[in-house]
Length: 112
Length: 440
Image (cartoon, rainbow over all chains, first blue to last red):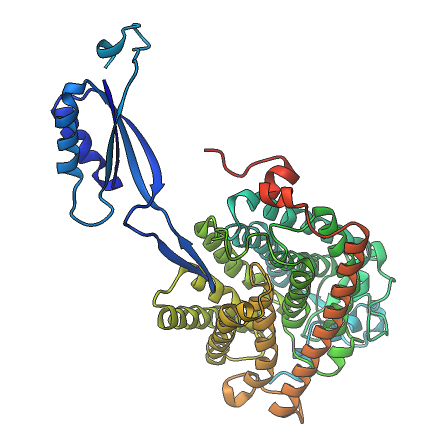
């Protein structure tokens, strides 16, 4: 099993969610985050006091899938989340040691 | 054209008519219910300016972790100022003594005042109940110290602040109110024009704020940490409540519901509008973007500038005065403050001090009949009046500046003015008040 962590632009969340459910992903966790990569922040000025805001709002999606689905899922995210401008985001794939469905006690692949 | 005696401050007629009615040779003085109703409403409007107007205006500009401390300080100071006013503040300000510097203690605890006591207005023979005059002026004595806290936010110790305000009211506000507005007052008898308190309220608060900011020192992390306003929305709500309430402040200072009050009302619209546009235009030109904080600050600056002028300038002059004050304040807060590097956190001196100075001196200019004002007193020229205004400003600055400095230094030596570093980092709401403004 793998855990896919993707940071994407917030306005792309709905499109990504639709694309993933279309290929059989049955759940995801979404967090609002701040971050920076190539995209830099912005400057705000309040009555002569300048503040540099280095972080840009993003959305983080975490999905646990069987290893066989990783390529499909990654492709789906990349295709829907890409705008071609800087700040489109990143995807990381991690190993998952075990998984449990709380309601039934099913484990590992049955829990996904 | 009103004579100088009638336009220059509240209390010439007041101190004359504060004597028993038997001193009148003319017909029985008239109390008009319309005037009384208007004055009662004006008093409420000024309270609204403080709570929640000023509280939100300032509160929105601090960080989330300090929001409640601003609301608390505003609330506590208001209450304390009101109690002090009843005990001895009214007497020291308007007690009707012969001293040029203070009103004496003859009306301590409002001695002798009943619901039938009357005081004079600007119109001979027209009176209003003394209680409404006391209440109206009480709200002025409450709002002025709350204005000052803008320079102290996020780092001042609550006990030190309350003690400072109590002493400041006693040594600065009450004497200056007497000097500018009471019959025997020094500045009043110079012929200075200060309709609703450009000197008494705004320059006083601005100077106290500046001195305090210098004595307190800067907030930790200034220039590095993110200290942007946590809620510009609430700041705008606060500024808007200030504008609406200011009609009580300015037009209510006329003491009657008549043409003079409507002139003050008109000016309170005109100057503010001019100031908003001027600030936003300047900001758009020099910074590329006109901000809500700028417009709200312009709004307040215009209101401050028209405060001494509301009863004597004309509406077109008011627009120009508001615009000039906004321009002056803009450059002060964006250039001068940073150049000197002090932390007048919410620009108390930048807005109220500079706005008040421009307004007070500008009153001398724009009162001219040639510029649409009501004109000067007999034999007074623009140059003479403007010079009187400047002197009034200087006296206020020197008295308030020195007194504020001494009081702050003494408090600092005895109990300390600032909270500890840990408290400042954690935020005053949790550390000092045990509550958080927002939970999410």
